[in-house]
Length: 306
Image (cartoon, rainbow, N blue to C red; front, side):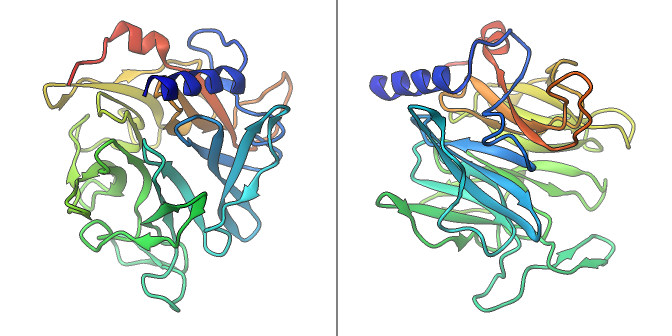
């Protein structure tokens, strides 16, 4: 375990140069971040293999890149992706499986999943449900759809996997018409129905959970102001089984559409996507992946022992 932590720390140091506290920096510019939209970076435990999704003509797919002597390798399509609109990959803490959302058909040979809104309107082929793919040797097996108890709608996004295999994700609330974060327990080899995670007001929009393996803290996006305002990234700590009041990550992070956080290897950094300009005068709206060191927030709020 100690060796694994040291490897992850070394990989984190290699993959990102020195960074001012509280200020995000672009992750792997020109290779992973750009020239096309990229988001949802998730890492193998040693921090040297990253999976993320890339939006291209015709949809999205999950990509993989590996850290080598010269830096991150040119991204390739993951072995299990490339046919359907797969996105939001989330690695399990031990690297044995990954959960992602997709418009894959619920039954083999079917058509892409339709998105059905609360008012009954349908967007053909644009639905999303959760799928799991297990590690098989040095590669991956065939993805399997999570059970109906979890996939109880067609607008499910942004999974995050914790140490016991349980999964957090976002789904719409038919009453408030906003997204809420929920948690599906993994027990005895199966997923149970998801239950709500209490964070802010029930009327608020809360999305994109990135949960520490021990569930001691979570980074997520939310709108706690009037509807129509942009969501902002927050961190919330958990004590005695309850999530504490969310803490805004600040204006240096929250601009230009900051969203989609995922924790890095070792859970001491967060990767999120944003269209923030890299250079003065830049007008590009390409979504890049940014890395933020969470050490200031973690140090200020010591993780509870469990």
